[in-house]
Image 1 (cartoon, rainbow, N blue to C red):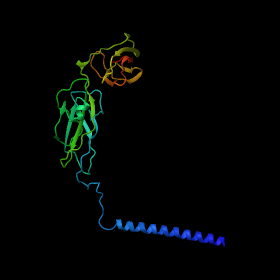
Image 2 (cartoon, helix red, strand yellow):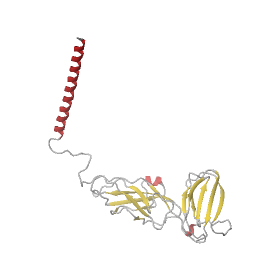
Image 3 (tube, rainbow, N blue to C red):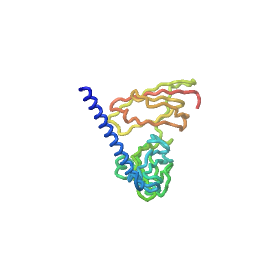
Length: 262
């Protein structure tokens, strides 16, 4: 008797589960038929193909093809950016570039170095700087905004920076060597200097004939070559050492490799 009761309960449970499952399937089918009935629906968040949308902020800012360069030719400064279109078929129709002496001034919308104004152009690569002559060894900040084909301006890009480099007449350092003249020679140097207060910006420019490795306070800054004839102007590298310079005693260490050729 007990066995028959258990079999009956199992049959009822299975039948109930099947009924629930069947009802769920029918409900889902009904919902599917309802959503497929009538005109096609359009996602209101997506603009129709070819319709203009609000321009997004430009991305990927470069100066002379480099992101945040530490030393560029200040007589040939060119800006590049990429545009992420908000609407399919949208395009840049104008731009405005601001260059400032500080990030704070740039945030205030002040291009105290250069304000290109609104320039009607779809160009976004190799846009030339046409402002006043730039000072040597100076950090500058810039940003750009663009207008879409509906004439609507988008937000400015995130601030980016670039550092101007040195002309031949700007160099104050002189070449050093250990006095030997044999080929394939290595020389080692050490320079101690003191700093009374933490600088807001500290950079070092280095060149070598032929190769080098440069350290500051035990940290490798970089290695050459920035090959040049030591008696004439040539290539050089720049390093931002602001975070490595400390108050008190600091030490530069360098290794030079002379290969016997200019």
